Length: 393
Image (tube, rainbow, N blue to C red):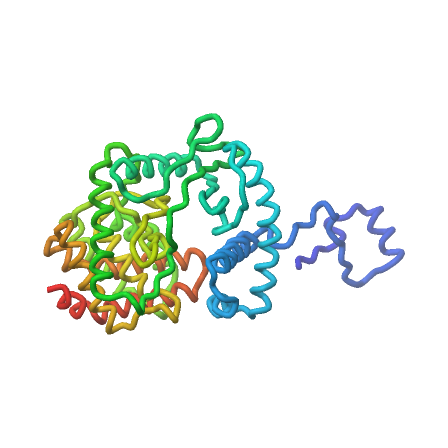
């Protein structure tokens, strides 16, 4: 707190009046109520807590146990239950709005929230909310173009005005069919052929992207460009005790050496088991193209393979089995869409850069715990590069 000499800031007459009550001591003058700043206004803390709580609720919606969520966020199970309860109250208010939106589709039925921004309707449709109109329009074009290529994606349901989406108060809503199946997979029961088929499934999506590329607006992205810009900025903000600067620099340099030789393609960009649907053990469709962009095509393969090491504890594959799975999935992809030798060699390089990207992202989000976990995965790949490559030869 800053102290001032009353003689320097108060009129003489006022000072003399004050001295009739108190003198020779410090006096605290409070702020006016209107000038008091609400707690948290000067920081992003409130927004960070909102995002964290939404993520916790999302984990709850997909069926993750309270105890597991508590472990993930280093909170008590009681705190997680309280946060979920608060988010459910918000969700119930949002549900009333959802019913109003459905009237514009002449659609009725029970509504069930499946994500923070998506609701299942009557067990047959999915209503999804967007805050960004351009993102919505791009997704519509993506689904339309892929549907023409007979790729199993949700079909868009037009509203009562025969438009592809509803717009109101800077919110945008799209209703689609609900594909059969779920994204729950028991990894323990998946054999070699299942993983080979997953490689083919990713390749077939890339082939379909190539056929309809001219019909889709997309972001032309560069992984190397991200690594050399915002990722590096975040990684070099301070000295990190869980990853060395030398390893960061060397890893980005490795990508730089091969970047121009790596074929580019429209990619999904968020390829994990949650975005593939399976009906009675068989693949039934792709969902969630919000992050699709043009980039190096092996990004999707690398991202998917890394994700298998991050599944829930009871569904996570062992490290030794993972090396076999890398070979199966890469071979499956290669059988549909031939990979160059440079691409196969660069798979661990791209994996390392993806994990560095996540370290940089989580540093920016001030999530040190998640940043450390990504760094551990980075070093796992780094320590096993040759083993990964040998498995593909």
